[in-house]
Length: 295
Image (tube, rainbow, N blue to C red; front, side):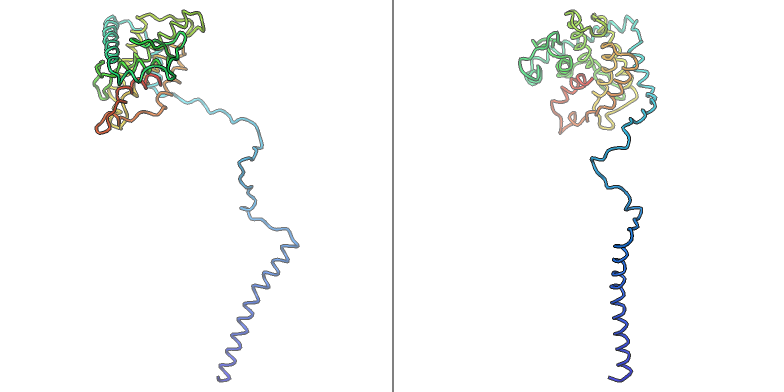
């Protein structure tokens, strides 16, 4: 090796050694400083660790949000259900025919075991004092389950009245909720127990007027709104219409009726899968009863 090469190699070796020692020295000085002086925290290090058990600094309640405006359609439905007086003799006569036809459809459905096996209390043998009676049976149920039972027999054969519009449907389905509530309220109030809706005793004329209102609410909504197009079952309209009139039957105020209708819309809606091949099943025959009990 020439002397020039030897000097170059030696210089490279010394440089490498200095570079190796420098980080070690820096680390040593950093360790000395950290042991003698307070550590300087970055903004990220000053954030408190998350804990599910952390207590808030104040137990004050959040200020309530400002009241929101109801959709005009909900306002109109609540006002109609609460305030409108049915004065048309033709409307009442029509409702009477629908009432008789609808009950006839329900009684005929009792001949089919596929229908009757769905009826009755959840726990066999249960009877609710002053409860809702299911026509053609010995069942006396709470009004919620009674609405399901009556709504199911009404719609089982699919013969009750049909309304064809942008959204087809069977407005007489609403009788499931209306008749269940009317019977339960009457029997309870006559028994002298809790006075429901101020002790109201419904007549058949009252039932017919509520049927007219339910038909109108469901029918008018169906004129220009097709829920089928977006895959929702038309019993959605039964739930909304029944809620509107049943709220009034139970003595709710107009404001409370708006709240109830809002809940009917917010509630998850049934998809109409069970009405179409290859998925068609018996649910299409009890879906209206389900809507009545939800209402």
